[in-house]
Amino acid sequence: MSDFTLARGETVASELPLQRTHALLVGLFVVYLVLLTWIILWKLEIPFVGSGNLRRIKLVPFAASGSYGASDPLEVGINILLFLPLGTYLGLLRPSWTLWKHAGTIAAASLLLEAGQYTLMIGSTDVTDVIANTAGGVIGVLGIAVMRRAGRLRVSRTARILLVGTVLAVLACLVFFASPVRYVLKDVPLTP
Image 1 (cartoon, rainbow, N blue to C red):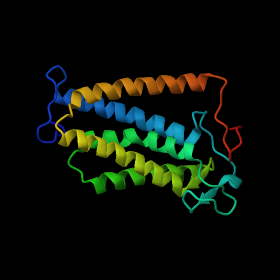
Image 2: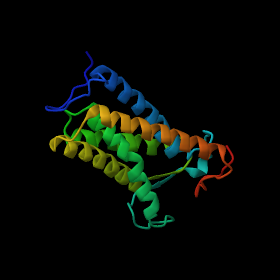
Image 3: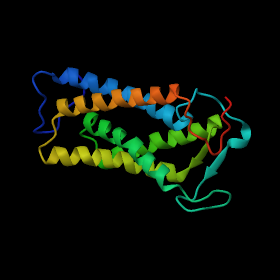
């Protein structure tokens, strides 16, 4: 038996047994992490390594500082939305973790992606992103916790919803990648 457990009172529909539900969630989680990495690091472009002059760090969250302007509210909102599924998956796959453990894991994942941007010289590393990403993930964890406490969480139904969402996200990313539309990188040249 896997280490995947349901919180007390949760059920898995008989048509989708526990081990199959767990395997589906793990597979979807891996696909989500690959998409998240591609979106955050390369903005749906062909992966590349930048040039040395693109290593920038913004340590003042949200406000303008030095050569950086204030954080764009739209980008902050997008970061929150991008990390909501991370919290949702963690809440489903690790229901026994405390909120602090979930938040620490989400913050570490966000910090790892920001460090990746710095290391690969493909964008600016921004504390605002870490805060927004962590907030989004925590909202996802809390959403699962609220549903669980209210007795409204059905893991198999939630897994199916995540399956549809992941398939739609993959299709949207592929359509964007294949289209002539490109995300304009503010601090990175488009040439790989």
